[in-house]
Image: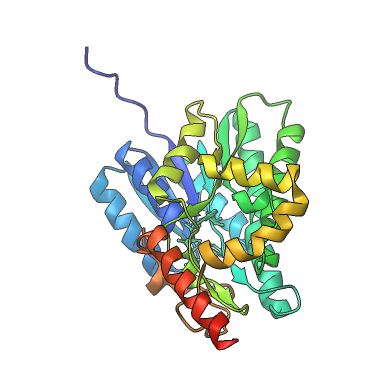
Length: 316
Ligand SMILES: NC(=O)c1ccc[n+]([C@@H]2O[C@H](COP(=O)([O-])OP(=O)(O)OC[C@H]3O[C@@H](n4cnc5c(N)ncnc54)[C@H](OP(=O)(O)O)[C@@H]3O)[C@@H](O)[C@H]2O)c1
């Protein structure tokens, strides 16, 4: 018997012009959904919209907006509603990274990481949830991070923002229990091969790279969209569970080991750091794309080991 065609949904994706958000947009397009694509840079959004049209989207609409600006998020949600009269699924994937300790990252950059990742998620919830609650149905799924469950060196602003996103998800679930048809989803990836590392603000001792084991943006997007079909969401990958266990069960060992392991597996010791704000303070949409092109994480660990050993021998 042929499968019954599924009704197109209205799917809004933030951070839709790159990485996990772009992968989610493409997957929803293949399913024949209506797409509302949000990020700051319009041209990159239009590139993704064109691709989504080709992949079978019922319609595409770009909504350039800064997620950290409440009025812009309000206008984007209102425009989606004006066009479609409903919003069924919202995937919150917009995010930025800054490397450096609290005392190293300039206040403006630190605050903007929190404003984008955490307050941007709050802005999204503030304007999407009244729509879902009035409909009595719909899904709001946030892309958090394993880093919302642990502490790592050199990522203070990101760690705080992602712990906040996890708290927000739990809070929204409590607050919306009176609407069982409204679901708040959460996925927490580990290392994903996207451009976010090259786009990051960098003020620490080394540039970032996705840590082993690295997964694809498509896999994370499928987990986020899978929540809508009853999937479990949560941690993406077994390694996240191991890291979380170490963080909570043996904090004394975790705190001792995380520094050297992070330098080896989650940073690139082979390139010099050029300090700067990356895409935190404004879009660098010309660098946005589906994949990061980071190559083999195991080879990168080997190259880092050599670079760190050379530095130690030189006394650097
Ligand atoms: N890649 C990983 O290893 C990894 C791991 C765990 C969690 N995550 C999380 O996954 C999410 C997606 O990350 P990604 O790796 O796919 O990153 P990415 O490839 O750099 O994409 C980030 C997207 O967010 C948009 N964006 C950034 N700042 C924004 C703002 N202020 N307002 C609206 N849009 C904004 C970017 O476009 P514009 O710059 O044009 O606005 C882009 O579309 C993030 O929340 C990230 O923290 C990623």
